[in-house]
Length: 198
Image 1 (tube, rainbow, N blue to C red):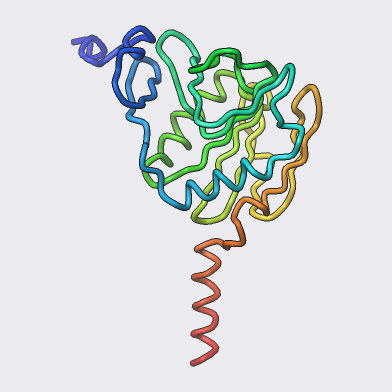
Image 2: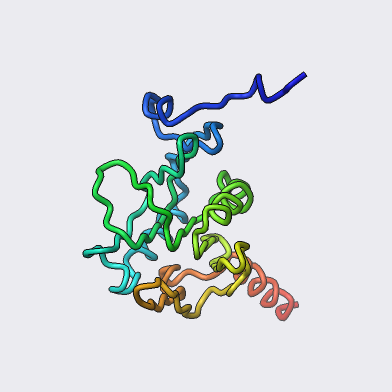
């Protein structure tokens, strides 16, 4: 029995008819997370507000957030932050492969962001994939090397220089948390304090 015959395999034509917000990967639909946790929203806002001027929208480049990337006829995703070396001229999607994608993970999206989307972005040739964890206040920067992602840096409070092909840009990730610290660090500090008190 061919199992694939019984699995959904939708196309862009179907996608455009759906109500609500969805992503679609290889013809399989995924409901997009509307009610994002507050930590996710705060972190996304802080990153966008503190991106350097090299990411500004101008001729020949565009930075956008939560905007549909039509990868092909059966794959549409909506990354948190995207940088492309091309102007986006449509109001509802773009089709150019991005230079950089950032995903701010949440409990409901982490498995997909670290698994399915990781492989998709790698396969499609996205140069940088950044996974931001707002709960641990950590950033993982993956860079495409020989068609595979390699961890270029893991940080919470340092800078990284991105080669955007037309220019370089320095992003200071210490500004992403709005003065917050990692929940793991808080737990460690609290336990150290309680141990000393004993």
